[in-house]
Amino acid sequence: MGILVAGISFVGCKKDSEDKPNQFQVADNAYPVDSLELEFDGSVTNGYGFYLDLISPEITVDEYGYWGNKGNVICFELISSDMTGIPSGEYVFDETGNGPAFSLLSADYCVNWIYNSPGSVWTSLASGTISVSRNGNKYEISFTGTDEDGKKVTAYYNGVGTVYDFSQGKSTRANN
Image (cartoon, rainbow, N blue to C red; front, side, top):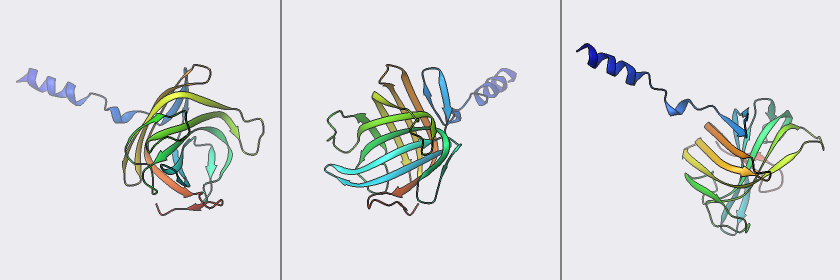
């Protein structure tokens, strides 16, 4: 009986995969993120355009979705089949720029982004797949790919996403 109890105790100590940190990583450098901003960009030929932004804690986001301060950010331009957010599924890079729903059109990251600074350097991602799991306004996001310099880039986020409507030029916060 003692062996059975010990076996159950060890199983209970197993680390849960949900304990992954919210962050993006470039090569060996990890950058924490604490918010997910979804920028609705309006209707496109094959669905709805969205920018999915994973933002570090230092960057402020106002009530309209505009950024301030400074920090680190990784952004993905996606084609969604749903105008209220990003549905669950895998989004694959589509270099044509006219991909169907569930396409990843472009992606970039900036380390040390500074509000209104022309010195902020953005690096483009060259390949990859982003996986999305959505339940209402809660998202689990995973990305694996490479940047234009051949460095491995990963991202993970599990939490609430806030949608901002940029489709009319000026942003408004959507119902979340």
